[in-house]
Image (tube, rainbow, N blue to C red; front, side, top):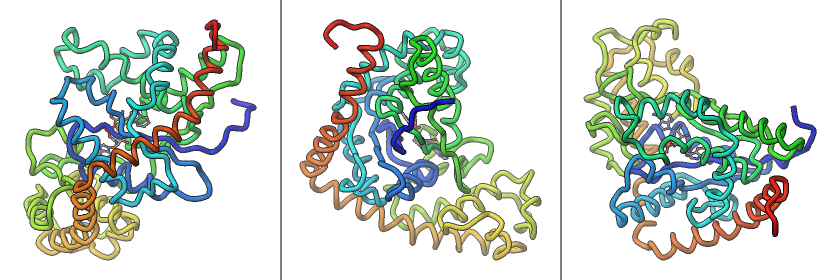
Amino acid sequence: MSETQFTPRVFSGIQPSGGLTLGNYLGAIKRFVDMQGDEFETVYCMVDLHAITARFIDPDTLRHNTRELCAGFIAAGIDPQQSILFNQSQVPEHAQLAWIFNCVARMGWMQRMTQFKDKAGKNAQNQSLGLFAYPALMAADILIYHATHVPVGEDQKQHVELTRDIAIKFNHDFGVDFFPVTEPVIEGAATRVMSLRDGSKKMSKSDASDMSRINMTDDADAIAAKIRKARTDPEPLPSELDGLDDRPEARNLVNIYAALAETTPEAVITDHGGQQFSVFKPALADLAVAKLAPISTEMSRLMDDPGEIDRILAHGAEQARAITAPILKRTYEIVGMVGA
Ligand code: TYM
């Protein structure tokens, strides 16, 4: 599809719109950590411009959430020496390229975005233009780095596909091979962590019930209590994975176990098949506490020094701009902006 060789580069982002959940950790951050290394350059972003699309949140809360998200990344194992770590609004090329992409993307493409439909509900006419245009900003986030790989949870797949469509149309319209056709990386046991109260709903920071999710700031007692009270059916775990097909809540707990233990759902069923939830849930709670409590402790330690977090973000933004400024300049030249 593309003849140009692009540097293998990973980009991904998380909204600082509320606290981090276990879904964000297993579906995204843990996998970001795994992609650090020699194979890729890794660039990770707190997408604060995205966080104001649904509504403006209190400015102090937004600043707090952004710093806390940065602390979460580092506590989970993102190394600012190895990865570029920054917040989106400090790198203006994201918003600048997004404008160009607003002029590439078609209304019909945006109207098909299921996440907009879900978030807007029956009230689409009253949503901000930003919420509608959000996927074009996400495409800009990715393509302003010429990122080749984007690790995300299942719910972001359609947005990465739109990013590919935007790259292809831009390249085609201007007769260039400038933007890569990015691969979504949606892998592992927990690309869609479900609510602990309802196995048909995604675990989400915006769910009204705090019992539906594990927050990365929860302490050991809260984590254990939420797993103990997680909704399940009365049957024991099956002895084969197929036995989970119509049991979404059981399937979810097995997937969470597998992702935390860095194994597969098959292996979890091999070890725990036939167990009652009165046995499996405490095992899962112990595992979750062992893996998550140290992250939450480290997050709160890092949050004691917000000045240091701000320095890390400012340094990351500087490193990011070394990549984004030339790519924006070249985009402007291709489009025909005088002075670029
Ligand atoms: P956001 O902030 O909603 O979620 C951040 C990441 O966490 C994943 N995730 C989940 N994975 C598994 N199970 C869940 N229950 C769950 N909940 C969330 C998401 O799939 C995502 O990977 N639009 C994006 C942010 C974004 C972005 C980007 C991502 C903006 N620009 C560029 C990648 C590249 C979003 O709202 O994610």
